[in-house]
Length: 310
Ligand code: SF4
Image (cartoon, rainbow, N blue to C red):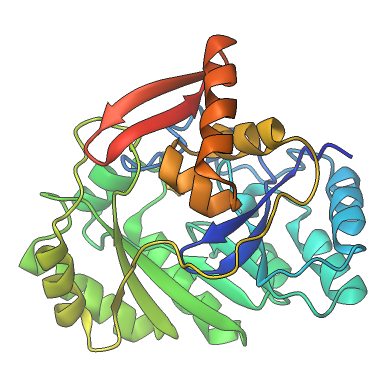
């Protein structure tokens, strides 16, 4: 079966071997973060609905997991905000009932956590990774470009309420945009907010791939270390992709795997090699074919040449 709503498994920096489940069309979100690897949000919305058919997603997950693949996580992420999908709770429950050995992670911006239905839908997940980049409304608007009416105050309240109810793990991600949320004032406000939320881990991240806006630049490593130490001793700076056993492509053509990955975020040749566990020569050959067919294009960035789907 060629999977439409699953991608990977990829070697995630934080989650190990992770099978992605993508519940919204590119690019559907409540925010339009300037650093978003998926580009600018084209459908900026707070409306929860069945963006892709729940039963079809469940059928794909069922077929994939029935073969007992070795995964660290099944991860809801991809082309936008997964909690916008009204069937996410049903899909999580299906996996937990039928395949209880798999851990479930949800990468979310947390903006819908003020909605009790959203919180209830996520209760059976093992790990929630929400983001919080700014406390001041001005910086929140500059970095996260929210849906009209959505405030940093709402986001913080939702995160606090969710953390009180959720019994699984919560890792909070703070994405640093140089010149915007790296000031002493903003970091100290974030520190207070994090203390009020009480996540299990805090992870500081910065730009690693081209963002939605070309002016966004990564924070230098020494700034990330300074920010992590201000936020508190346990705050981690996110490292590079973990190494170790690399999965061979499980099914389908290598080209499909490459396209499914770079459709969701631009990658370098090295990223693809590590993420997908393929040989560089194999990736390079497929990229040349895709470029010749006009399905992939290159863009040179600070970290190297990135490939993106056309
Ligand atoms: S980074 Fe996440 S929250 Fe921000 S626009 Fe992209 S998908 Fe939405």
